[in-house]
Every structure is written in C-alpha cells, then in structure tokens.
Amino acid sequence: EAQVTQNPRYLITVTGKKLTVTCSQNMNHEYMSWYRQDPGLGLRQIYYSMNVEVTDKGDVPEGYKVSRKEKRNFPLILESPSPNQTSLYFCASSSGTGTSETQYFGPGTRLLVL
Amino acid sequence: AQTVTQSQPEMSVQEAETVTLSCTYDTSENNYYLFWYKQPPSRQMILVIRQEAYKQQNATENRFSVNFQKAAKSFSLKISDSQLGDTAMYFCAFGRGTSYGKLTFGQGTILTVHP
Image (cartoon, rainbow over all chains, first blue to last red; front, top):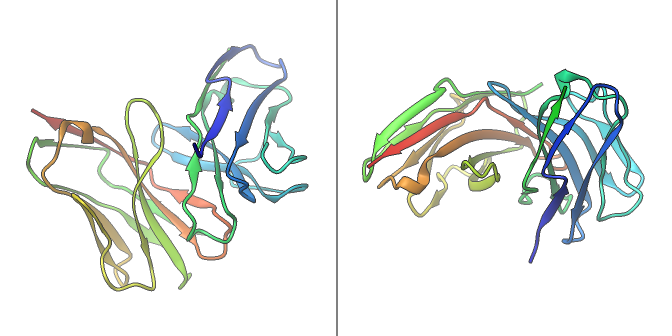
C-alpha cells in the first residue's frame, strides 16, 4: 500500500529538549516536504526536498532543521523546541515533476511544547 | 507570492442538500494548479478534486465539482447531495506549475452536515 508514515503521532515535550519527527514514504518519490497546521492559518510549508541531499526552506523554516540522506526518509528536527512550535505537523511526498502530481500526506503529528 | 483566501470559517448544510465553499487566490503565474483537500476529524488530508489552470472545463469528481473562474481568480467547491461523512475541514490550495509540489493553503472552512 502506497503511504507516508510519520512517527510519533503525538508528542508532549518541554522547551529546549531536542526532538525528531520521522517521515518515510514507500513510493520512491523525489519530492518531500513538511507543513505545519495552525488554526486560522491553514497549512504552511516549513522545508522541502527535491531529492537526496537537496533541501530548501519553505515559508516558515525558523527553528527547524531537516535532512535527506535517503530517498524514502525526511526527518524534521527541532533542536530547541519552543511553545510557539506547538502545532500539527504533516509530511507529504510526490513524484517531483511538479504539482500535476498528487501529493500524498502522512497522518500528522500533534506536538505540544510546554 | 501567492495567497489563498477562504472567507467562510464555518458552513453548515442539511443532509442531501447542496453547499458551495468559496476560495479566491492571488497570483501572477499563468501555469498553476488548484486543489480542494478534505480533513475529517481523523486529521488525515484527503485530496477531493484538482483543477489545472490551463483547462477551461471545470473538474468533477462524483458529488464534488468546482466552479473555476480564472479571470476572477475564484475556485469554489460545490458538494451535491451532502452526506454526514462530508463533515470536515476543507482546504483550498494553490500550486505553481514549477514549484515541485509546494502548496499554498487557505485558512480552511469547517463544514458540518446536519441529519
């Protein structure tokens, strides 16, 4: 089954404690991205990757890091989480030829930073 | 930069009735795509329908159809014969033709279908 998986699905942490949210896709997609969803703001792109070792900032990259060492994985790293990073996070992937390709979303990770 | 605006934070409809959700966007691009995504209480993002800007014909998927007005930069979603399972948050999204999948989303509209 074609899918994007994220772990963990729910996470409660404290300010300053480094965390990683994993994302993996089994469709051999080139393009992967991270979004955050906040009430009244919709989804906003944090970072994206066009292929292995190729990443770039989206609209709200501050406080986040990513890496793309393997095609299937695209982890999101919060080196020093702060309460304003409390949000619902989505990973997405597509085959990378442009937006004509359907984007597949993961199930979401709900993060609470105390 | 592109912007997407959904001016209806909440909508409600009776089961079996028709409802239309509004979306407007702003762009200087000529090659782009528009999408409606559904987000039920499970929070999963589900693609409902998409429209290529170069196509004049409005997209249709079963009970879901769009009214794409390119000159007015308007992209509304019509849901016919509403069902209880249509209750969800609906997001309008814009994608540039060469942006390798980046989507710009609207704020969302919460739709409630009443029995």
